Amino acid sequence: MATDSALVIVFTATSGVLVVGANKEATATGCRLFREKQVQKEYLAVVQGHLPFNPADSVDTAGVPAKACTFSKLGLLIQDMEEMERLRNQQRGSRAHQKMPGYPRGARHGPNLFTMEQARLLRESQGDSRGEVRGTSNGAGTRELTPAELAFTKMTWHDLTKEEKDAYTEKAKADKQRFLKELSEFLSQEKVRLARKRNYESLDREDSEEPVAYIFDAPIIEPHRSTGVFRMLVGTEADAAAKQSTTICFVLGHAMYEGEPVTKVLLRPLNGRRHQLRLHMAHHGFPIAGDVTYGSQEDEAPRMMLHAWRIWLRGRPADQKKYGDLYFESPDPFELMVPSERRVCTITYRKHKEAEAIKAAEANEKS
Image (cartoon, rainbow, N blue to C red; front, side, top):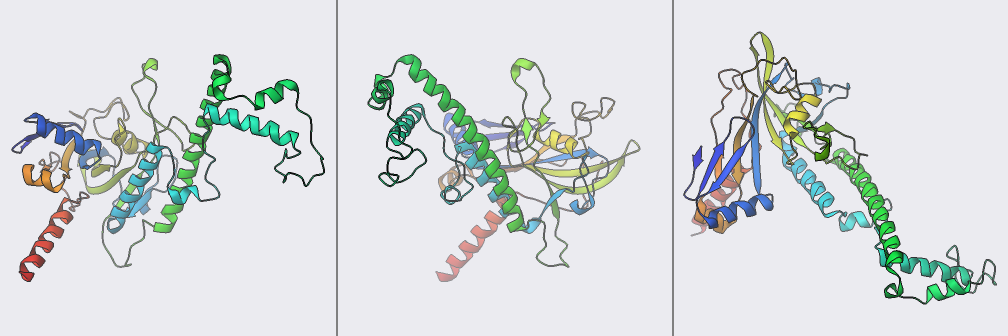
């Protein structure tokens, strides 16, 4: 447990972090920071098997090489993934995306589809059924509209019956699903293009010994509650129900536990999908020890070896002045079992404090 003047942080024995406000104002501040995604979290886990330190030496359960990112490019990766998540949530691409040839045609609402059908009939009556310029086809391809069609072209949306409006609404819903599917495919392609451009896994210097992270980004499908299924599923980029999920994983050390090889890892989720860390580790072939849902039913570990470790609520300057830094860290509960062979922290709190210290020092020099 970590305490502050107005916030209490409780790190639970699994993956939970309980943030309790001592008063309404502090609680509202905490809620706002979570809502604005100004919270960074890290977890510790012990997984079954010896996961290599270097992702280049590992493949997943399907034999596919692991995705990777060097520590120095981690900030760039997080920035890119958070931007992709934001675009998916707002259901549209950036302005630059919308100018690209492959960007999907936007979804139409019922009144738009109604107006488009009217325009199509008028084009057909003017010899412009395929988009030719009026008056240049010498009447070729024209047809006379029926009285009903002519009357239809003069109607407004408010003239339609409820049944007619409902029909256009259903068409609009189908068009929205078409757009979302095409947008998901477009953003998935953008994600691949960005990865090639950024070259996340490359070292700036060949002799560098900086840590390299595993990047687990299998989409996750949550079964409908009506099915009564508790287990999350790994989907594909093409699955409309699959939610994009990204987990950063650094190997911290190896050991033997009860005669079996185990690995201690640092996990940083960039999304908040249910069971994300557990599912991603199991999907890569290294389930968390004690996880009988995604690992072995015969696992005899005394508990699920997943623990909330660090959290930073990055408040505004006014929040920091009132509540402090809001950075909290719990002891490593697995240190005796699997000693850490290296120290890694993906939370930018330290960089933030270093930048503040430099700025303060420069201000003092000027004064």
